[in-house]
Image 1 (cartoon, rainbow, N blue to C red):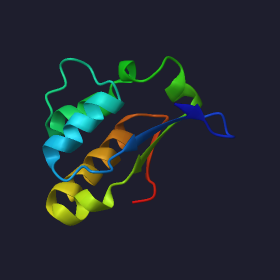
Image 2: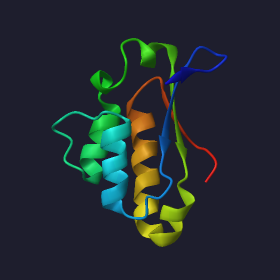
Image 3: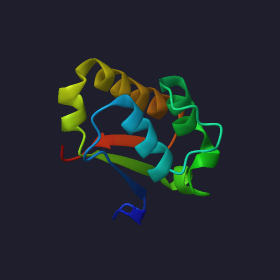
Image 4: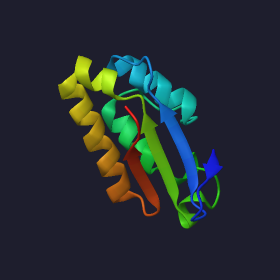
Length: 106
């Protein structure tokens, strides 16, 4: 985790080498340190990303930017799954004030 010039916490989710849903869920669980109840499915991912206790204390109040990198390989391999992943990221930002998700370099 780092901070950007605006003071937001920046978390990078690097999906390099991830080519399927199981890999995405594992990488999210590991990188984002998701809770034990994370069920490695789309609904659980949306719930986890929207759970304020997942993020460092005060991060959402200052703003938290989740940068997703290395995602193009997965998007090419499973475009329908990737579309769902994008919808989950969008839903999490809609449900969680202070959370922003952006797609970085593919």
